[in-house]
Image (tube, rainbow, N blue to C red; front, side, top):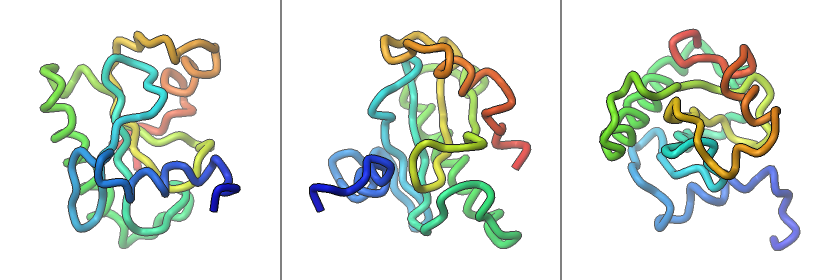
Length: 131
């Protein structure tokens, strides 16, 4: 599987117990490998869903669990929950639905292109409370 597409990286990362910060029966929290802020977490479901467009009406509890796990991750940062953005990219670059939980400072050496800024500060990021 060494030739696995890079777009599957998140699917592999969530199975690595060393990367898991918080785990539930429905989802898992990991740190973003290329953070775009001082604090940048990803919350991913165990269920094989690639994007918000594949969600069904029965996935409400999953989205709520993902958000609550995101809040747990935020509690480790020392910042208030309102100092973070919570959202899903309209067109994600990687497979597996993932909730971005990202501090609003947007201070990171990985924030090196206009695209990175726009990915979190325009309608490209669908806020959790709009899903």
